[in-house]
Amino acid sequence: MKILVTGGMGFIGSHTVVELFNAGFTPIIMDNLDNSQLSVLDGLTSILGFKPKFYEEDCNDKSALKKIFQGERDIIGVIHFAANKAVGESVAKPLKYYKNNIGSLINILEESAMANIANIVFSSSCTVYGQPDELPVSETAPIKIAESPYGNTKQICEEILRDSVNSKLPIKALSLRYFNPIGAHPSGKIGELPKGVPGNLVPFVVQSAAGWREKISIFGNDYNTPDGTCIRDYIHVVDIAKAHVNALQFLIKNESPSFYDWVNLGTGKGSSVLEVVQTFEKVSGLKLNYEIIDRRPGDVEKVFASTEKADKLLGWKTKLTLEDGLADSWRWQQSLSR
Ligand code: UD1
Image (cartoon, rainbow, N blue to C red; front, side, top):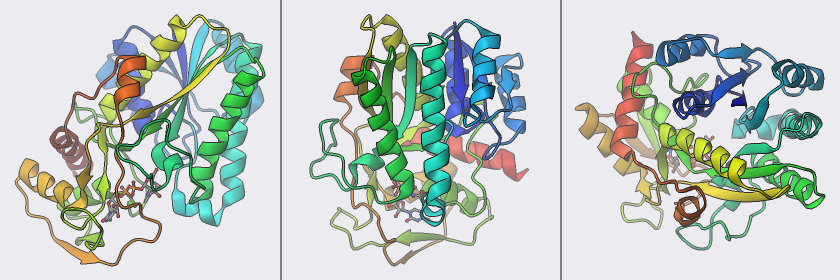
């Protein structure tokens, strides 16, 4: 059973390729390498024992998408990761984000419908909840006004899926709202490849430990949390990848001709920035250099997921811990440092 994985060379995409194969699917990768590297294919080849099929194409190119669907013939589902995701860049270049992220989803929906491909899994984000009123955040929590064009593209894409299904387009779609993905494949052969100075906490922590960065800046310790630093729900990328397999299996089994729903992917447990730093020190045996600086504008104080719907609908729960995620991120970082 062939599955098209757009953005399959990226962080979550590449791990999902592995888990799809482990579950008996045949992943077909489509990626324009805009924010990923060809070396990911070597890592995947080494983990899988064969080279997965890879098309270096852009989902914004409708004819490329059509060609893949026609050439491969029996694709039964699409997992759509391909999107721009840098929050800061999206503020500076909103049109790039609206064009790429929204245009590519529209192409996927039109071409999937043409090719009779019903099952669509969409990569969304907990950013749609903003600062939630209640914790843990359940899927019934209201969508807040987006803090960035990037966040807005996720909201709009979810609306496009909902409206398409309401119009009886013959697709079955699930949006997966990720909390904070961390970690890497335990083999150390694939992981996250942030470009430039990482904005996210865990890549910054491991790069500091490796000596690539002088010290970690912790953005504020005067929040209303037990140690004053912000709380997030850090989830291992392998757990996230497995959830995509469950999501596909759920959609394939679902007999309605048109269907849309959305599910949170988190651990259900919040960890503070200081807890992440201390847990990293424990798993690596290293001492980290950090300082407390001002709050980062726009930061949410605390957010963590309710995991009930994912468990009920998809039969999925996380198995890996913060320790696992940090140990795997560190192993991956060390492989880059060599
Ligand atoms: C990320 C995005 C954010 C988006 C959200 C939900 C980035 C940089 N942040 O934020 O815009 O709305 O996902 O999709 O893309 N921290 C530090 N020092 C650092 C880095 C982070 O103290 O050098 C803290 C942050 O203040 C935060 C926590 O670590 O409290 C996690 O930060 P991050 O990894 O950026 O994730 P989000 O804040 O969830």
